[in-house]
Length: 128
Image (cartoon, rainbow, N blue to C red; front, side):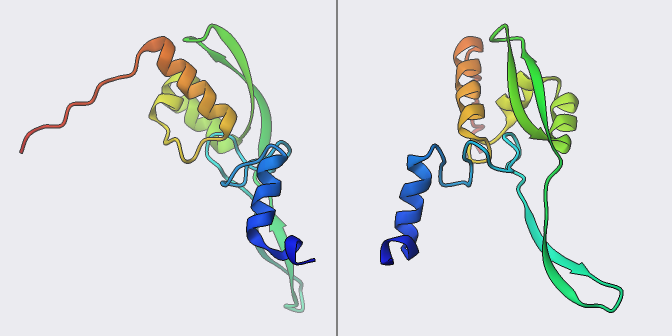
């Protein structure tokens, strides 16, 4: 019973079943691009009785077209991320700008493949 309550064991179980440290697993309710997940709040009745509830993100299955990889990519993203991808000029441009700690393992693989295909931009620090 102690093994189930140990957080390190729970982490190992998540990693064994295809998840990672950031809460991504195969069927999680988490956006693959922005890492938006469920939030917890109260359902408030007319008599002001508060009961716990979950606010789920608005996730949709979307097929993106990657120009660099010349193929279609299916991702489960929030509608907010869909707007962000459109605003940044497509999936390739969005992934190049996105931080690696927010992306899901699949999106991180896509980012690395796009960087390899396009060529990683070199940033030079200005001397001050």
